[in-house]
Structures are given as structure tokens and as C-alpha cells.
Image (cartoon, rainbow, N blue to C red; front, side, top):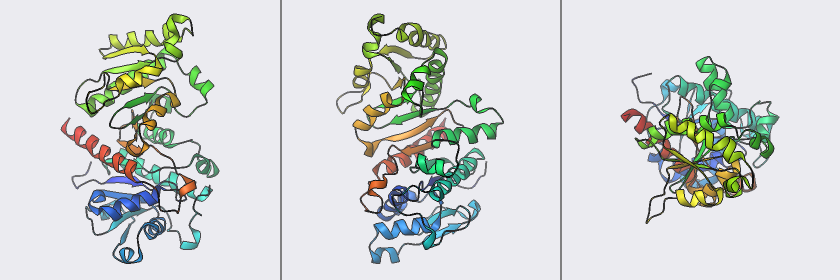
Length: 354
């Protein structure tokens, strides 16, 4: 750990998508909102994004400061500080907007790897990741399908343990609802196979520890069932009886405040916090990806934040993708990135206070 101020790193994501644009809009609209940040990626990518979102007169007043060493960083609003990954790209080398490219995938992965390692070494306080494209990662030869798996690998290497000994979970959160997934980027068939008592207990434990730090108290965790009506007493499947309920009972014996399994079609309504009432639960543990992400995203992607739980670092992200279809149109909404940045700051503050 260093005694000097530590920035929050924002990786600009896939250079062909909207990640650089939403970062540029945050800086254009409120330079103070990224005063404590450093963008990780490529200077030319960010210059192009600023030119996209700023009128010619505004662009003249915006300056980018390239960094090749984090020791050069200091909090300021007069420039957008960019930690350059590798050799800077020229204008002619920039990936085309809205197209899958190995070049963009490699740049995005390199930025995440650098930022993850910096966080693990205590050089940055948190990591906020703009969207990456899984097809671009694959084209670049990256062996991991997304941020979560890539960060898990770096953390495991840093700790000197097998990746299986660094279990992580994905949380999607907004102001009304928080969900955590038992499995992440696998097929639905594989996700059902991953519904085991061991995996569910592990998910509950990771959720409990993360939310205890986030909330400053023990959370009340609800667990969703797998089958319609949570199996209806075994009439629609026995997973709730044979797998999920034993996991809940085991977690209770560990002192965790957890209940369920609840019917998936009603548990999210019960957990949702609204202006006139708090939700019954702080977070819902879900059995697979779409079960947990659909209700949160339906409430509004502009406020959604993706968090990776179980890592020895703070990582948040907008809850949307690269949106290649609107890249270069200048219409991307930076609200989710703003929420991700604010949540990262709150988590850093909570950890310092804790």
C-alpha cells in the first residue's frame, strides 16, 4: 500500500463500443466526477470519443494527459488522465466503430489485466470497467468469456492459488433490487447442473460477507427456487427439497440470516425497495444468470451496476454491453457508468471505515 492518494481506475472497454463515449460524456459534463480517476486504455481511443461527444469549441478546451507510470497521476479536473496500454494507436489504427475486432479485444483485455494487478497490489482503490465484447475477446485469443472470469484468474494468480480456490459471484444492483447469481456465463443446461448444495452454500456465504461490508450489518438474504412455484412441494421438481433447502439450512447453521426457497415469480417483488416501503430482503440469491438479471434490468439499466463479489478488490461496472448498434451516434447514456463509479466510491469508503 502507498500513502499517496490512490485513484479509481476506469477501463475504457471495447474501443469499438460505447465505453469510451460514456467516459467522455462524464468528463465533458462534470470533470469533477472523474477527478479521482484514471482511465486505462489508449489515448487515441479517448481522443476520438471526446471529439464525438463535444462540439469543436469544447474539444479545444479539453486536454488528455497520457501516463506511462501511475506515479505521475494526481487528482485533478483540468485534464483527463489516461494510463496508456502499450504503444499508442494512431488515428489510422483505431478499431472501426461498431465492429468486432481482435485488436479491440486485446486492448480491452490488457487494460483489465493491468488494472486488476494494480488493484491487487494496492496501487488503485477500486476498478470500474466499461463494457467489453466477448466475441472480440475470443478473436484476440483471450481464454475468458468476460470480466468476471478474467478478474478471478488474476486474483487467483496473485494469491498463488488455483482458480477454483478463488470463488466469485456476480451481483447486479440498482436502487431498488440486488441479485446474486449462483452461475454466470454458461448455458442454461450447464446452469441447472450447477445448482448443487455446495454451490448454493458458497454463493450465500460470498453474498453474506460482501453485503456485510457494503451495508455495515448482516444482510437478510432470500434464495429463489429453480422451478416454477419453487417446485410446489415436489410436484414441479425436487431441486428445492433435495438441493436448495439443505443449502439454506447449512448456511443458517453458519449464522447467516437467509430464508427460502421462494417462488421466482414473486420473490423479486418482495425484495424490491420502493419509495413508500423497504423490501423484505436485502438481496436475492438466484439460481442462474437470466433469473437474476432480468428483474434488475427491467427496473432500468440506467441505474444498474454490476459488482464482482468474492475478489480481494473492488470492481463495479455498468449493467449494459458495448451497444455496437449505437456506437459513434453520440446517444449512449452514461448514467449506469455514473452509478457504478459512485458505488465504487461508497464501497471504498465503507472498507476504510470498516
